[in-house]
Length: 256
Image (tube, rainbow, N blue to C red; front, side, top):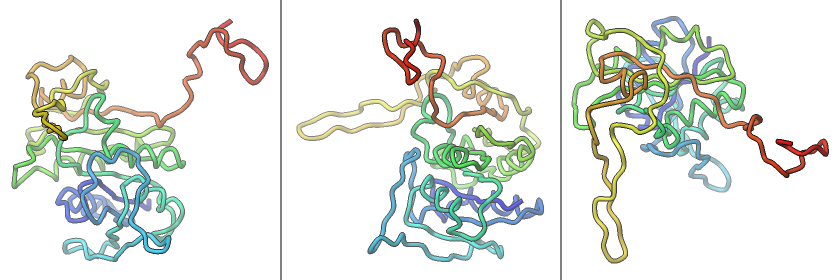
């Protein structure tokens, strides 16, 4: 398969390199296109730096590999959109986003640039997977290879119509307890809180609000030492929602 590897941590992220190298070793054709600068929290935003309408990109050497890599002045979702239009060569068969530094769990996936890239791929007809490593931001060495291995193992499950959101504990592969399907936690263990407020400013911070997570949730399985896998649909119509008194296009009242 031709695989596009992207991320939201930027072209110099060690997680991006680890994922690209592992997918290459699996025998797939890999092209890397990632933000020139960190783009965390960008969700599925379509933003780019352009000059005269031209989005800036530069070819880069990725580690010691011969993989074609592009540093693009755009958000991950925009990069995926460009890839599906042939901007980096033939259109990809699959998009892999990651490996993100830090977990993407619960309702917070709405804001993740990693997950946003995967959902954008699916919305444009390309199967996709987002993979994140539950690593402390201050950690110098991390078990990127564990997350890369899980991502490659899950490639056969990418059949289109949904994205897989994968969160992996920061442990050696031999210490991983297994892989579990998980639902999105209603409230993540780590949440954004208001730290300080003054005249003309506010300061936010990320805080761990507890060690107890919902059983069966992505946070729960991570705390128990498992990789958590959650299928996600891209945005679409909530067709089953009743809207009493509102007439649909067929002239019928929705919901009676």
